Amino acid sequence: MKKITQCLNFPELFDKPIELKFDEPLSSSDGGALLLKAVDKKLQLTSALADCLVDQRQGGKVRHTIQDLLRQRIYGLASGYADANDAARLAADPIFKLLLDRCPVTGAELSSQPTLSRFENAVGPRENYRLAVALALSVIQHQQQQRRRGQKVRCITIDLDSTDDPTHGQQQFTFFNAHYDNHCYLPLLGFISFDAEPEQYLVTALLRPGNASEKSPVVVGLLSRLVSLLRAAFPKATLKLRLDGGFACPAMLDYLESVPRLEYVCGLAKNAVLLRAAEPLLGAARALAQQTNHSTQVFGECTYQARSWDQPRRVVIKAEIVYNLRGEPKDNPRFVVTNKRRSAKFVYQKAYCSRGEIENRIKELHHGLEIDRTSCPSFWANQFRVLLTAAAYALMQELRRQASRTTLARAQVTTLREQLFKLSARIEASVRRLVVHLPQSFAYAHEWTSIARRLGAAPA
Image (tube, rainbow, N blue to C red; front, side, top):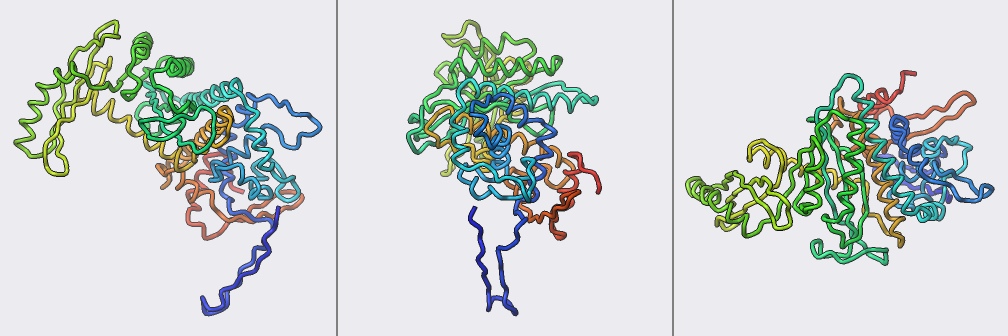
């Protein structure tokens, strides 16, 4: 790695000349990333993922194990290094060497970008399937272990949603999507939350072609596997599912109603029949809106059976009158199909609308971990990248959970990284031990040490 030896100075910026030298050999700007190692040890995530991959390389030519390559990519993603090209910048970083169980002083450098690219492109569909199952199992089993200490799980909420992943090259299975007006992939993301806890844990991330449909049997199959894993881990819990209107199809609804103790709310596209059913409610909402000159909502329900359904189902109606920028009232009816027995207002406002919180998780994946860096020509290499990003997010979510008693309890991924990881560190090595020197004036020292203690650190 090319070393930076420049010496800079600001002769007239301060009272005295300021001289800057890039000459500190055993130092890093990611000293706080040591927390990633502790979180990974608690989850046993990278070791579980590594067990899913078979190393088919010639043994005599292997310098970096499969587990090391996985950890380098996942820890790098969590630390803000989204591209394999960043490997050249981090190859000699002592903290990242330490994260891979190498001596920060004499240990071998980390793998190069070509090695990481070959590694990503060697993963096929079977390996990706095993990795996806291992990721879900790791998250679910960890949550199960956390709740064996007397904390009962009464209900588990599942959220499924897709997002766009714009493509800008000749990637396999990239297609034009009219809804997003772009060539893209459509990753399908699955989250789970427990009882009234605010955190929604990412458990699955499936990359799909840009023309994929939410009504595909693949979605039902993925949901079925997820439900089976949750049932095995939490047999007494009630499952709740929230979906937007794109998932409403006969196959999905039939499956949901075949699963015992599963409550669902699913958006439903408007049509002439539903609009006629909503008209009396809209009339009542218009009368209220004229009295108050404010947007008004009235809730109701009807029994509805589409031609493709084999039975009638309960549909909750939100009859809303909203005012546009010119102050003109406008009808805004919305429909939700459900098997829940609560009031129409509760089903829509509490059960359905609360699914919007996963948009914040999806934004974190896009802006905090750059899940859309799917630039490989191979579709399966891109799926592998998505799963690596999902694994990095799982580590960051556990780190946020460990920060529950600090000021970072609800911090975004970028905030966690900037305030916990981006920390100057100087390493001092001796025969008996390694000492990582961190700044005494670190603004978030209390939060960092509190999280470290909860992850198993003990006072020296």
